[in-house]
Length: 76
Ligand SMILES: [Zn+2]
Image 1: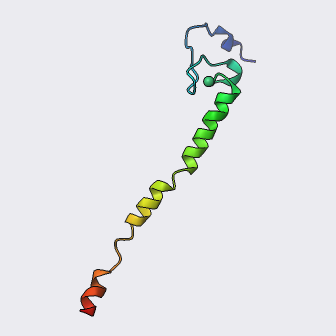
Image 2: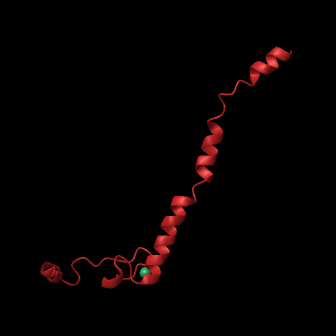
Image 3: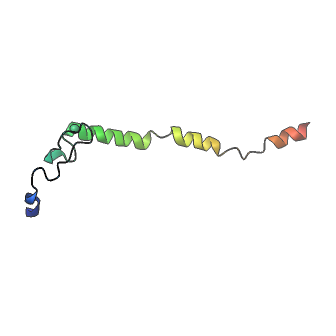
């Protein structure tokens, strides 16, 4: 269908696998193999879901508005 794609000259833009730095394979672009594609996907998913550590700390920081000192002052 895309005849223009054939104009690609080897060496013009050799993309490399972001996982292992090997030259990418057409069938698995932008990776060199299905394995690397899955590795990247796994990383991506993990990175998107494995961020509970940050928001958790932030949420804790969002609670300091609680009037705790007032209670102590009233009890004295
Ligand atoms: Zn690779």
